[in-house]
Image 1 (cartoon, rainbow, N blue to C red):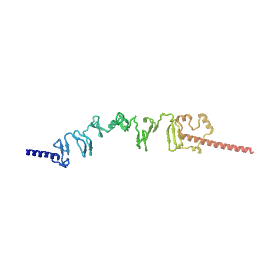
Image 2: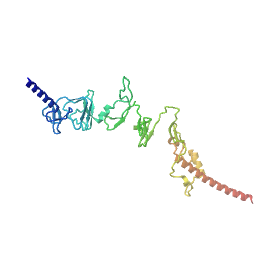
Image 3: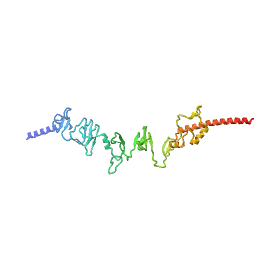
Image 4: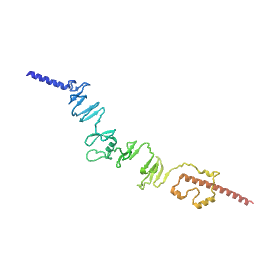
Length: 332
């Protein structure tokens, strides 16, 4: 009986030592931890492990799993809390929704992870408008900051960025607190500008069209500095400015040249009687239809002033000659 008790004691002690030291090739540190040599493999559910740790079956991690190099899962892995990977994760056999070299990982409504092309992901993920999330508790929906959306149009290679037609989005460039739909702090550049008009209907490099919504607001363009107004354009086409300088190409000083043919006043009178306006000056109907060129009209006005001056000089000379003859006759 004593021999039987002694044999059972030795057997239980051996099992205890075996459980603490692993498979006989590991070393126990006395603190309940088992270690293995750097060139050894440990197998659970397999007699021929070919990795440092190979598990044939399910693994449950209730705390934190740290993978310093790589981990291969043939089927499933369940992580209770955190999974920290300091290396890289490869999923060559993950189901893909499309054939695309640049894919991202998404989770469908069934909880299955799949890969999807980046372009389609942006269209699908950001298809909603401003109400993007159900925040808080209850049924109230709060409006969160919208995101830019990229999409394409059928039979077109052009992409679009937009926030939605009903989205109260304020986009800021150079500022984190935009004050309007688009607020740019800094330098901007464009070679075309359409305001209030369909870009496809532009008839100029800069095309502005305003709808008169408020009848009391007559000004459509205003430029001012910190002290005064510099330029103002109202809805009737009246342009007000402090001063406007027009570059002159040719100025009518040619009237005073010797070879200039000054039209005699008799011919001027005949032209006026026949045409109803001065020679070399557009008629009223042409100006009403085509408008007035400020530079050309000022040049013509100066031309007529200089011609009139020459006529006055000529008349003055004639008057002086007549006065001389009168004086001579009176002195006889």
